[in-house]
Length: 346
Ligand code: UDP
Ligand code: MG
Image 1 (cartoon, helix red, strand yellow):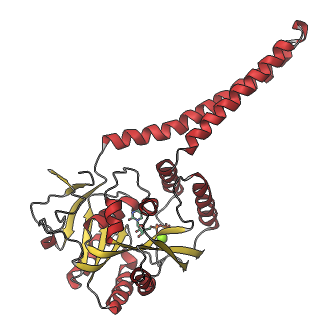
Image 2 (cartoon, rainbow, N blue to C red):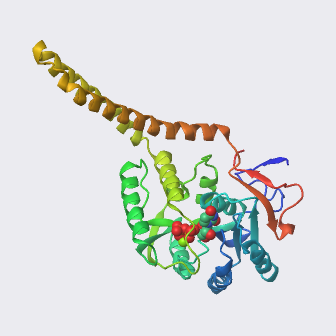
Image 3 (tube, rainbow, N blue to C red):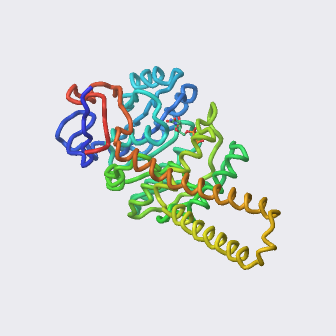
């Protein structure tokens, strides 16, 4: 399959292949990544369509099927058959939330872009208020969670702790307690699409872009149906991506740890040498062994921290596409000149 470079300056439309910049053909794009969300799609469409229609401007719903294994793909095609402003982006497999969202953001062509989850935990009904803030001069309106309903205490505690640790570590001010739910102007999205990151933390990249970003507070509802798609392993992975993508403080911490260990060892060695030879008894062996074990522990965990960064450098230099689009429906939106494989790199 031929590889198509994505022209992130958007000189070429990914959907129609024309040389006409696609931006601002529609007023609003709602981008929704979907992974095994079959049951809730009807309500999702009903609520999002209703609120978008009430605005009285042109809009599209870009629904990304992230390699779902249930009937999500078929349900989306059925919806697109009935509603002409639905665009379905089928990825070739499951690429994960961040990459699926990026695929949708790459394909959408609205002047304003609303990012929404398919499970309706974030209320699309806030859209008119968010648009008012945009019209009042904001470039990004991000949803800030006052409460998180229907989530386990474990998820709430880990999310709370993550945002605070991340805030401490991050070199960029990224608002706490925010998810993907936000409305952005096209000029902010264009900056984000220029970023070559392989490991994505999109809400961080959007904050990094700057411009005028304002919060809108809301209570996060429970999932409409089904279960969350973020097992602990994935959550830890995203936290690692966020921290390594926005901070080198963990590596600095490792340097400090090395200095502390070296000072400790020198101090102990000095004390030991200062003892009269007769007092350097063999009974100290367990202490020495424990110290060596602790130092090795520190050394291995330091290597692991550095390894996390090196792994990401390797991944970045490998430069694989971030996602593969298998098809876009309606297919008329995509010419034959644009085969399925898409990469974010120029
Ligand atoms: N999602 C996705 N790919 C994945 C996992 C999730 O596209 O591999 C979508 C999912 O369908 C939903 C959104 O990402 O629209 C958020 O997922 P979820 O509700 O599980 O996350 P949480 O609300 O717990 O952060
Ligand atoms: Mg959710």
